[in-house]
Length: 203
Image 1 (cartoon, rainbow, N blue to C red):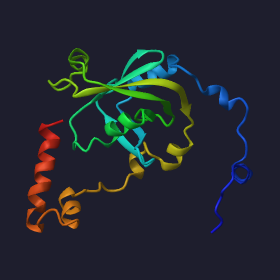
Image 2 (cartoon, rainbow, N blue to C red):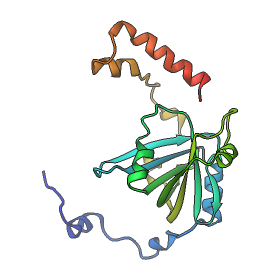
Image 3 (tube, rainbow, N blue to C red):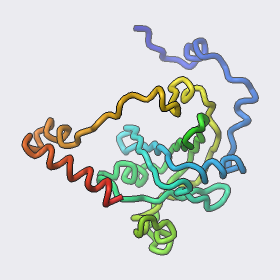
Image 4 (cartoon, one colour):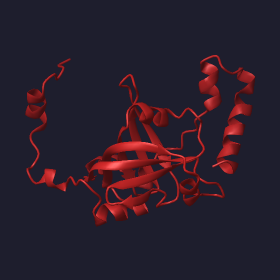
């Protein structure tokens, strides 16, 4: 094991970026970023809790579910979930966030860094209604940096090539909970059936 514990050593291995690369980092949303957000049905939100533990949460809905308030601000609706609300609690103690937006079939991603606030104004939440229900609340992100990430990671993963996809993995939340002693084994199937029912009726 050879731990890397200095920036100097890291740069010996990775090298230095081309000077022009840093110029792709903007302090606001340009036309390309606006278009990407409008086409994106999926993002990953990174937050950090009061103990400096990083956490990442997926957020998804119909393409364009994230609204652009202005060149410096985006608004993300909060939908029904498991109510653990890790990301939302984290924002209350540490507003700094990072986001990665995906567009299916496009291997570049859009990265945004900024500061988040939560808002439960009823009129605002109604503007983000979906499937007959308003947003539970919204997360407003003031942008510090916005930039596109190159395609190499997704190209290496062949993420958008169906021919490379493995068989679907069936996750049993019942088994996960039973493993921790929170559910009797004979109730696992019942619990999982309830989860899948909510996937169909409670989005």
